[in-house]
Length: 248
Ligand code: BJW
Ligand code: ZN
Image (cartoon, rainbow, N blue to C red; front, side, top):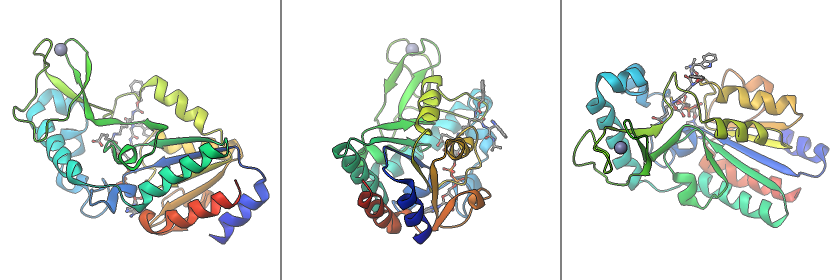
């Protein structure tokens, strides 16, 4: 934390803050991460439930996976970490500081906590796309009665509006995310940084001379490049937000 304070102090006036989150920020809301012990990839095979090929082969299985997650997440509440980031955005707005929250999470908990300027890089658990007519729509039915669900316009098969392995992130989101990495300070919270292209983002920010602070319960393979702050997001983000606010 001392390193972070010194880095911010040396930076001078902060004009642009960006946050990048992963599943670790929702862990304290009781939502499983992917690659930790007891993570989702211990129970499910990635290729079965998080690839277009898996969905093509067995849409029922994929929908059961997402329906189960929707049921858990519907019951979940944002934790102190989510709220601290919403407070940071509010403070940034008051000081005319640009604030962007880029998340890999599809759970919607940042919005529930009050964050506004959110880029959902891997899509949303609460949106679907029709495989036939390609219409995008919101979907809140939980649990889903008929699996796999069908399109109310054309009866085509619906898929979750999320980004699976082998699929491109939405161009618009990608461009906005790269632009957001041109910032004064980037907080990278609760992500293993093992999934691309998101794993490149903090390095892009470093190249742009941003202070990159990584907040995680354990070091990642990238930690040596950043200012590493060890701890649970829900326990330490309040202090980090407080620290940044001192320099607004
Ligand atoms: C805490 C905590 C607490 C716990 N507090 N911390 C370049 C190199 C190599 C490979 C590739 C490459 N470019 C592309 C690839 C292939 C592939 C990829 O990255 N593979 C790697 C696995 C090697 N990438 C893709 O396929 C991507 N698409 C793409 O690049 O397209 C190119 C293309 C262009 C044109 C045409 C076609 C294609 C897409 C990736 C999509 C990932 N999708 C998923 C599923 C989304 C929907 C869903 O949620 O179901 O996204 S996979 C999964 O991983 C999910 C997550 O968002 C993502 C990241 O996981 P995350 O959040 O980091 O979770 P964990 O579990 O890994 O980490 C949790 C962390 O929290 C840990 O560090 C803990 O310590 C920490 N933690 N508790 C703080 N309380
Ligand atoms: Zn349709």
